[in-house]
Length: 189
Image 1 (tube, rainbow, N blue to C red):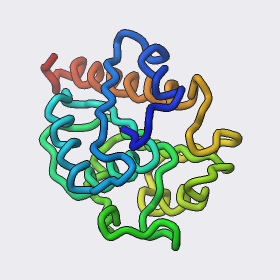
Image 2 (cartoon, rainbow, N blue to C red):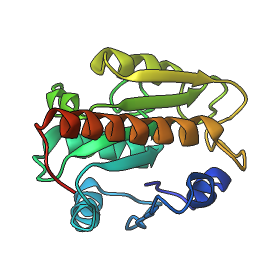
Image 3 (cartoon, helix red, strand yellow):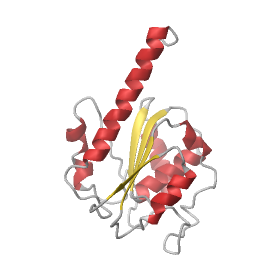
Image 4 (cartoon, rainbow, N blue to C red):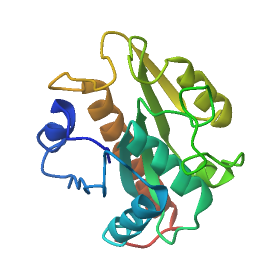
């Protein structure tokens, strides 16, 4: 989920992940003048299409909206991974002030997501790199991936780190299912 046009890595994510993954990229309403209520509504529509144990990716404002939504709303379907790229932490500094997008202090709903990975480039010209450390304080179990030379848009045709992390998340889920199945504790599809 992103508020701007898809970047090179977002457009190539389906190819990089392969046929075992279905990449959905919902278009957010009024991306140049975003309002949380409209984006929340679009998220709810999009979440209705997801399977249980989905993996979510959000970039920039799209990432912070995912964090806000998931931290404040109760959801019926579980999420196996959340990957956030170059997201602003609203209220963190003078440039990022908005009552509409501000986070509640409590991120406890996010603790149920088994894998959260945060990516931020040290040379991000839009969202200060310091936002990554603030999110790490709010989400101590998150994996943090500080990167160099990616800017804000991560305009590399291939964002290998996120592809590898998503595949690792999926493999961990499959290992967990196999372990439960082998122990007789789990029966399912």
